[in-house]
Structure formats: structure tokens, C-alpha cells
Image 1: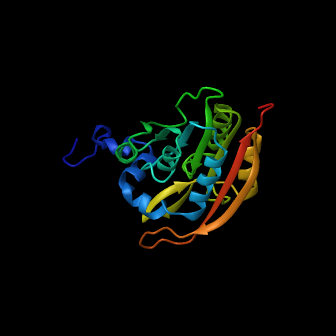
Image 2: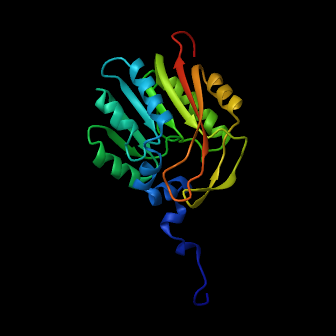
Length: 225
């Protein structure tokens, strides 16, 4: 082997991590600054909190820095399990919202007990999964809700699959559904969409551009799955 020739064993550890972990490790607190004040996000949280029973058990998928989602749920008197694939984000969240429980891991691999949560938050955490993975995870999250429980989901609605986009100055591959297809995916998972809200938001970040955002407010019905 010649000097300078790269071997498989020379690949840096971070290159072997999931792309989402690499991305959000790099973004860290900048992500909270850019998105943490989004009015539609805060409104969706209020909607969920108004419908939770006292001392509800909640799941925050892609919990990021813990703010605003886990922090708002804790402040309202609920327990929170936050799951994020980025160890940097989990460390920040544990420091900022110590009353919540945060786990570093891939939500696709996390066992979810049926009928175990009163509320679930899925804020922009599906976009680096395939369409099949998004659909499968949504079904699992619906089953993890107790009958009558509520789920709020936010995404960037677009008919794109594994396309490269620039997100906060960094290239990332993204997959999503058009608005009607997102709604159909949620319905197929066994959830009733009670309301939906489409808006445009510009992140507080240099070069931030207006983004379409879709928020779905959902319920797992008392009967059937």
C-alpha cells in the first residue's frame, strides 16, 4: 500500500454514523435558535397539551435540544421520553431539560410498548427516512398511543425521494410526501387527523429561506387500530 492510500479501516468513525446523527451533531444549539420559536410548532404543542390527561406520559421523537417540545411538556406537568440519534443533541437536551428522560438512539430500532403513551410528538424527524420507513414508524407510533391518545406530526410536504437539499448550509438527503399523501399515511397508520395547518416559516439562520411546513393534529380512536 502506497503512502497516502486510503484503507477501509481509515474511514473516520463519524463517517460510519447515520447521516442524521452527523448533521445534527454539527448543528447543535444552532438548530434550536433557527427553529425553536416557530409559531406553528408552539401552537401544535399547545394543542397537544390541552388534550393530555394530568401527568401524561409523552414521547418526543427527534427530541433535539429539548426545547421547545420537551421543556413545554415538562412545564405542563407531564413526563417525557425524548429520543434522538444525535449524541450532541441528547447531551444538550439532558442539560437543558433535566426533568425529562432522553435516550440516544434510532427510533426505528427502539422497542415501543403498545398503548403506553398519552401523547406523541413527531416534529420534522422523518425527513431522512425512506418512505417505507416513515410509514412503518408512523404505524408503530400509533400503536404505542393509548386509545384516545393524541399525536402531532410536522413535516415539510413535498413529493421528493432521496434528493439532496441544503439545510442550514449543509447538504443533506431528504425524502417526503406531498400534503395529501402525508395525511393518507397517517390515516393508514390508524390515526384520525382532527385538523391540519399549512404555513411557511423562515429559519433564523444566515441564508435561511422560507420553508413550507405541515402540521397534523391526530388522535388514536378509542375503538380499533
